[in-house]
Amino acid sequence: MSSHPEELEVSQARVHNRELMITATLPGCGDWGSQRDALAFEQAAIAEETALQALLVREKVEAARRAMLLYPQQLSWNWWDDVTVELRFWLPAGSFATSVVRELINTTGDYANIAE
Image: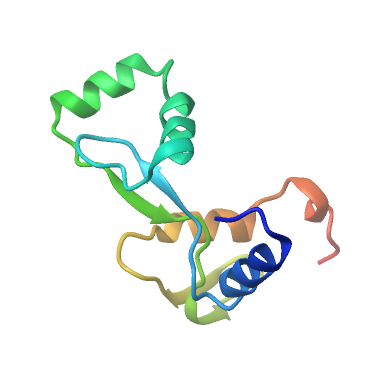
């Protein structure tokens, strides 16, 4: 990505419009899908995790990339009683529903004490 403000603005708009996705690596064997500075950054992030790296190699886990932002589709919910809610949504392959649920019930940060 260029450091020119105009190009950065165009790229940001493309991310906002979901034409581009910000991704992160799932470390493993093979190509991580990143290059140069990005690859060095990602490798440095797990450099001290030698046990994890050894496990990934031993188990022949293939490296992959995943989107950092999820956009659940067809989201609906039904309150069955005062404490039970049923959630329904669709995610693309490789996404984890538990990540979405965690974000929905997260009780830390700015919204921790939101009124019910």
